[in-house]
Image (tube, rainbow, N blue to C red):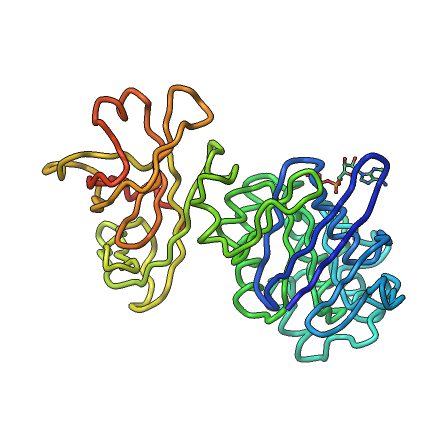
Length: 358
Ligand SMILES: Nc1ncnc2c1ncn2[C@@H]1O[C@H](COP(=O)(O)OP(=O)(O)OP(=O)(O)O)[C@@H](O)[C@H]1O
């Protein structure tokens, strides 16, 4: 368990938080620019000396102002990855990576080192100069360097923001592997709904230095009282279990909790594998009767739980229940009026297979 109680004033900004995070997995920290995400990470790492604080990471106390405990940054077993990979340009990749190991009090073992190098796919880069690396490769090297210090906590502050979409797409699978294979807790600051939906288990929402919400990703994304559901790229994430594949059409069938079926475009995966998918509110349309001849492959019986104005006056946001799973739909106010959409109504949610993100 991670316990954080922090009060820190910086000029006219105050960070004032009290939160508990899971001992493992990815907790995404999100919030508007200036809401205190970086300050939170800096306080945890000890780069900011919060005036009143309790920082406990899975049983280790790094700071407790009531008991006068303060560990300086180099005594905190933390790995920190920044937006721009800050590698030493006079050292090659191998020496950069091992720098993390050398400066740690409990460095990664040989076998852990090999595992991390393999996990991040940088084995073939070890002899290269850092100047010859692509942005994505540089960031993978800096993540490896942070991990080789054998941290108890990994902090990442918008690690993909400086990369172009192609490099981002290249590095995300490595982050997913870290998530799947390492027990380490990771706090991940991001402005990207896509990264959050793919990586996070847990979500922390900050607003002007205060905690707005803290809970499992699945539960917070569909909440209409939080700003995420109102953003242009609002989405929910659902877990589905693979139960079929049509190779000719590259269509993967997933069974959702509640026995609903979802078809998505994907490569073949083993039966029984759990796949996380994201469905954007703007990709869900609604019909009162089951369409008979539609190109929409996913027609799911749904019940309306809530109808709210969207940020655009021309649209409404609808929260649906699909076999116990939440789904968001954003439709025009015109359609909502024409269909007479109201809480408790049963209807069909339509989702194109090509629109489901996985
Ligand atoms: N050393 C400092 N002195 C004074 N104010 C500071 C200092 N560091 C940060 N701040 C202010 O604290 C607030 C929070 O900054 P912080 O960088 O934590 O926000 P953020 O949520 O990470 O923002 P972004 O998403 O833009 O990176 C901002 O208003 C910032 O100007």
